[in-house]
Length: 247
Image 1 (cartoon, rainbow, N blue to C red):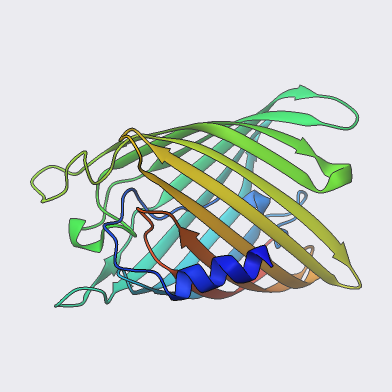
Image 2 (cartoon, one colour):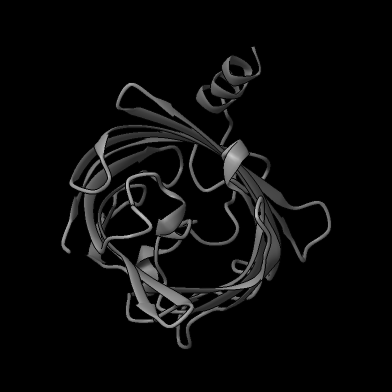
């Protein structure tokens, strides 16, 4: 019932002025990746709404150096929701995390992500050539398939562009994810909330993933996404992708 209401709201949504940047969860929260392998993922996604776009994705996870894990995502963006379509390479994002506290049933991680500003500002909000740094604390409860995270995003618009801090305000970010699996399939649902440093402004993100295959070898994945709130980037989107073990 709640999912149907969210989809109806997305389909019937009125035009909005989006705030913030396209959200990319750290790759290791996707069940397509194994804890014990280095995995390359590719995919394509399409988004409907005021910021219509198609993205082609590449992700690499996870690289290890001692207890620290690293991952990388990068996209090529076709932005169609403008009088003149824009396209180009997006901003790569580098992710890192380290365990702070380990218990038999739970682990607490410190996680950070940084956007490398190489894109053109015309690709906003999917890329912008500006700066974004996020710091999160994440609680993992593997027996329940549960991850919960909360932290802060710090953003700065690119110089010599029409973007300002009112387009990319700092934000508080909280999210929750559940994972269930069986018979070769894995399902995941995730909900994110972004509350901006502007009174009354927020975005709410929902994501559902269905994956099939062995993360130690090859996985196919289908992802459905929707955003709600007065400052959403898009109304809904769909992604199809693949992940394969490198070593």
